[in-house]
Structure formats: structure tokens, C-alpha cells
Image 1: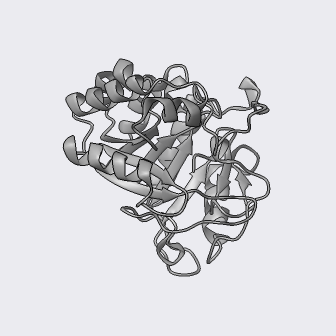
Image 2: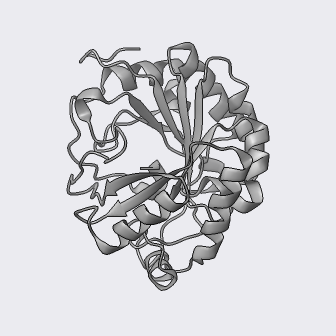
Length: 266
């Protein structure tokens, strides 16, 4: 699939839940969030069905996100359903790693190829402060489990405020070097204000080469993270929603005043 700016669209990011077991300060407001109703969240059959249509139209790379995807009940079954779709050559997941120790080997057996694990600090106290609830040892165990299961390469997503020379970022980079992990620096973004930049160590934020679409947990297909444009796959049908998302994909990001990171998946 090519959009009107001749960009090949072959990457689908699927948010499977808006729920999370952490409350990171830059992602969720302190007062909590208004959660989607269970009946509004896409079923496994709907997710797999749409993914099949997307793959038939040229998608070959799929990433499972959240919220935190591992809190979605039955996630192993969903990973298996997606992995069995012929034509996907890169199936990955972004996770906070807290439950990875429990699921890593099952995910690998179900067909997941690799994972990105979020880690913004290696200081236990700072981690608990940033996540409001988290225990960093759970993430360390999760990283070890992902490596042991062969979900390689394990990439670490490190959110920075301005520079990778910040104290926490330097410490995370050293941790990655010591443990043979790849690091990606993601500058803290603001959807409402339209603040975003390129990912250091990845391809995110490069509008002129953007190859992705995003499916939210409640079935909204978004051609751009930094845009209000979205197409409901239930109302429009899988084929029509896919075609419209590609046709109306903007040349560059601007602002998103209707969505949030926890329900789009970043």
C-alpha cells in the first residue's frame, strides 16, 4: 500500500487494551483515567480479522501495544492468532516488562519474535516515583526472561526529557551495554501541543518515511499519532477503514487533541 505521498505503508501497531499495571507520570494523569467499557474493546477475532485484511493489502510488520498488552486476558491466544497470519515477517510487542517473567516463554512459543521494554531509569526509588506503583526488580526479571526465551533483539525504550546525556539516560545506556541490549531514546512527547521528535535508535518521528497505521483498542484506525483523524473499523468495515486511513494519511504530524498515549500505544 502506498499513500498519496508515495510512502509505503506496511507497519500496523495494535493497541489491545487501554489498561496498565503502572501509572507513569508522563502517560497517565494522577487522578486516573476513564477506562473503556469491555464491550467497546475489540475482540480477538476482530483484531485478527482486521490484521488479515491489512496483511493481504501489504502489511508485513505488526507490533502489539497497550496500555500494557500483557494485562489483556488471553494475550497468548491473541499473539498466536496473529502469528499464524501468513505474510507477517516481524511480530513484536512493546511492554513495561513487569509481567514478562511470567509470559516470556509462552509468548515465544506463540510466535512472538521480539520485544521492546520500557525503562527510563535503573534507580529503584526513581522508578517507583516515575511509575507511581512499580518495582524495578520485576522489570529486571522480565528483561532476563525475554532474553532467555529468545525474544531477540530485546530493545529498551528510554524516555528522555531533552537529551540522552541526562543522568537516568546515561545509567540506562550503561545497563544496556552491560547486558547486551539495544537502547532507543524517545523524547517525551505531548500529543495535545504537538511536540514530537525523531526516535534516537529507531525510525519513529520521521514523517517523510512514516510507514505505519495504528489500531486502538476500541477499533479506531489512526493514520498518524499526531492527528485527530481516525476511522472506525466496525462502522466502516475492515477494507474501507484501511483504504481511508491510507488515503487520508497526513504528510506530517500536527496535534492530537482527542487521543492519549495509554489508549493509542505511542
